Amino acid sequence: AQTVTQSQPEMSVQEAETVTLSCTYDTSENNYYLFWYKQPPSRQMILVIRQEAYKQQNATENRFSVNFQKAAKSFSLKISDSQLGDTAMYFCAFMKPRGAGNMLTFGGGTRLMVKP
Amino acid sequence: EAQVTQNPRYLITVTGKKLTVTCSQNMNHEYMSWYRQDPGLGLRQIYYSMNVEVTDKGDVPEGYKVSRKEKRNFPLILESPSPNQTSLYFCASIPWGGTGELFFGEGSRLTVL
Image (cartoon, rainbow over all chains, first blue to last red; front, top):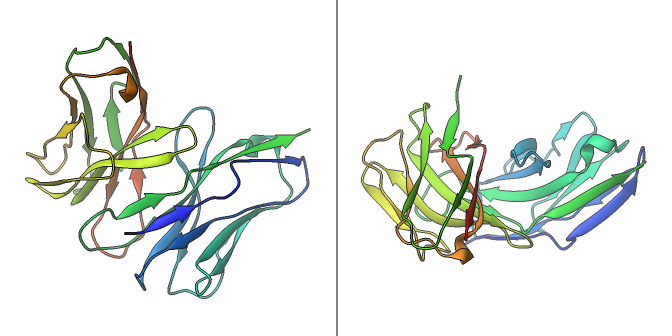
């Protein structure tokens, strides 16, 4: 079974600054996907970024980028030029593409507050 | 439009009154799953289904039932709700094999008094 750990329950950052959210995971799988999801007060789960484990290149989406360290089983999210609208709960998630059992495992979440 | 639809979005009920939260997807996905979200605990899996008539327990199945009679529907049943089932519930639908896509419902906020 997979486990996902987010060691920072809460974080804050000043508007326009950079913040990094940590995520580590444990798995015996070789092929898998990693995700960061944002959950604003609307509660909707919004995909921020996705990383395929077989790709060495770190994924980027505008102001969001990841530092994927497969050997260390680490998957941190960097938010550059933080904006007030980035205030939300962020979840790291692991997904295996096939096989029995739980395909999708979430971390406990990090609540990010962006301050003006 | 590809989507996962959950109903109801909000529900306040009383202890012991049976309720069903529906989940429907229009993408012909094999895998569907229910999660509950609680502060500090992230999203925990309740039940999942790998295909029609194939369901299995997740990490926190106690007090819940599911069924998968059709591929598109995966209802979550609380036969006798209790206050500790007050939570935010999400249904997820995942295509089988290597696409890396996830689809979530919009969440159902359930309060059991």
